[in-house]
Image 1 (spheres, rainbow, N blue to C red):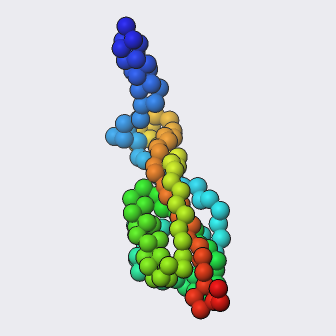
Image 2: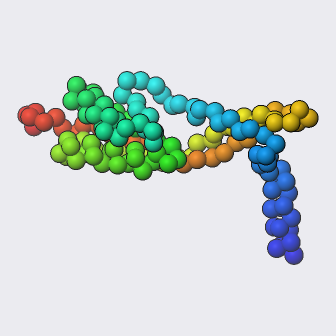
Image 3: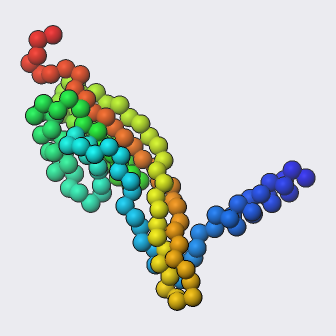
Length: 143
């Protein structure tokens, strides 16, 4: 009895939250909402050169920035983690990491390919990571 009730609920959920078939629509992905913006906030992507991202982070930390915040979504999470670990190694223990994970809602616009259909949107969920890299001690500082 309970199994039948659960299966009915699943079917209703699938009907309400069914994704629209893509053969009738062109899917246009919107850019994700960006959290706080600033000079020390860096958004990591798979397309940007890893070495360039590493150099930018190193420049910020050597110029006296006390902390930088790295944001990565989806497939860029691994690259974001690698970048933070490389920074920790390069600054030989004077940097510490604070990692937060979460889920971000992304919105896609559905543009109909047939005149009879209406415009629509669909929401997807993707994983995210936010890594705060901060200086715990300055090199050459008196302690």
